[in-house]
Image (tube, rainbow, N blue to C red; front, side, top):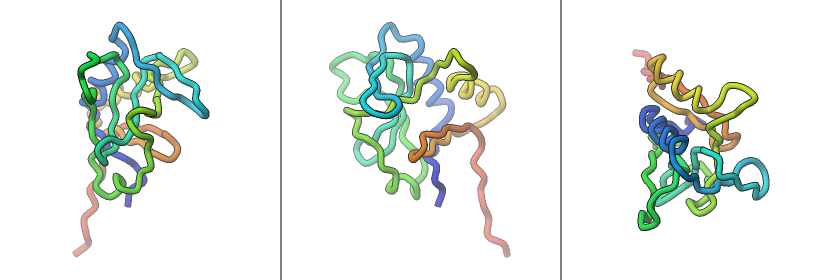
Length: 137
């Protein structure tokens, strides 16, 4: 079983771009404790039994659930312990101290990567291709 949750890179990058270009961002919990920030971020949460990633760009108030990208990993999904949509974990997109998550996503698209991989336990993020294992004959 993989320890990562896999999300479609193109869809996640679209969410990230929306969060950066939005006029306003929803406050999202980041780090330890209840530190909330309205900086552009991806929100990692569980909704309707599925792990999801969504940008925190402000959506219209009558949208019950903002558009999001569901995880594509049937084995890891049930085991991931993620917060509810009301208390989503934030993954900041911009970092002035070095390479940012947005840089990782856009460089991944340029390099032909297909997946965003998130370790739900450590919130480690990577981009790449998923290897397919075949049984030896």
